[in-house]
Image 1: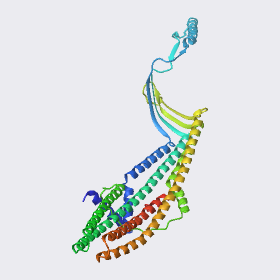
Image 2: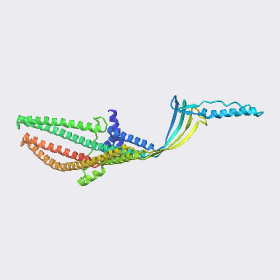
Image 3: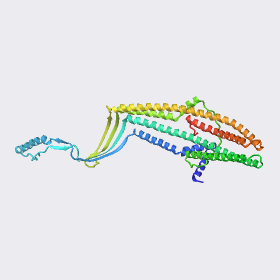
Image 4: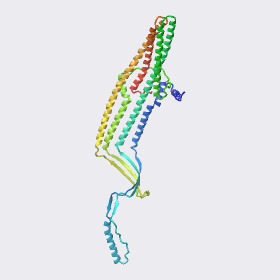
Length: 461
């Protein structure tokens, strides 16, 4: 036995231990919800939307950054400082006064002469400069951050609904595939019984031929019946294999994994068509998802309208400046700023708002269309389920008549009072009735599972 076989066997044993009332189908549904690859991909998309939402919420928190700059500059604009023109006349007068005092006053100190200085020209850019600081930015008022968070919240909720919608669809597909496999298996069992029956008829026909009670053509006819049923049996085996492979595909298992069957559940009465439509319109995930998309459209409109409003940030800087890297007490600085940014004129804002409003109208139109499609879907599935229930009642009556007719003809055939054509026709009628009953029995379950999904119910429970 393969490892996957052991794993699935252990899984079924474990699931059975959790609850004695858990059916094999419920165990398979739980297994599919855990292992289906497409569902896992959608759950990853939802997890990503949650990460984006956390990013949007983080924009409300202050941001701390380390910023450092070291620059070397040459050239650029200069500023002329006429310090020579301003100070040289003063220095000259002071030198004259000092000279006069030394000659007139005995003991006057010998003071150095004031020099002549040149006018200065200073570059705006320092030849070398550094600035290293910690910057804290705290948003005080920013409508873009607020509306972006709302958009991501609704987007995440829409992704969650998408996961739930596929989850329900997967459960529906598993149940329908399970009943289709069971229907194919019952059909296979029927043709196996019929093959044994026609082989027995062939043996009986050969016996009658040897006793000169029938002609050779009766034997040929019985052989053709065996071959015909054998072909139908081969087709039934193919149907079982394909149904088994598809069911295991949904469970992400090996295509040939065995499937445990169970008795059919009791059928229930259908709700009224009007009640079914109202229930579907209230519970279908597609409509809920459109509600989130409409909320996103409103948030986007508010986001674009908010471009006309100011943004206010509180900015704090602490760091060091200077020509050379030095972090002494005379080199640090501290600065706090309240930064206001208010766009006075931006023509594109109005255009963006109009685009968002058009997108909202388009989504509303799509929601109305989907609502109508759901209503039509309910009508179609409801009538199909009702027809399946009616066919089940008809098949029960039909099979009783066919069984009685076949037993009577078979008895006459063994007594030589009926020919092979009559027996074959009676057997064919009985087989067809049995096959129609099998189809009706399982089509009821398939259509009920589909109807529950159409109504938006959670079939996993």
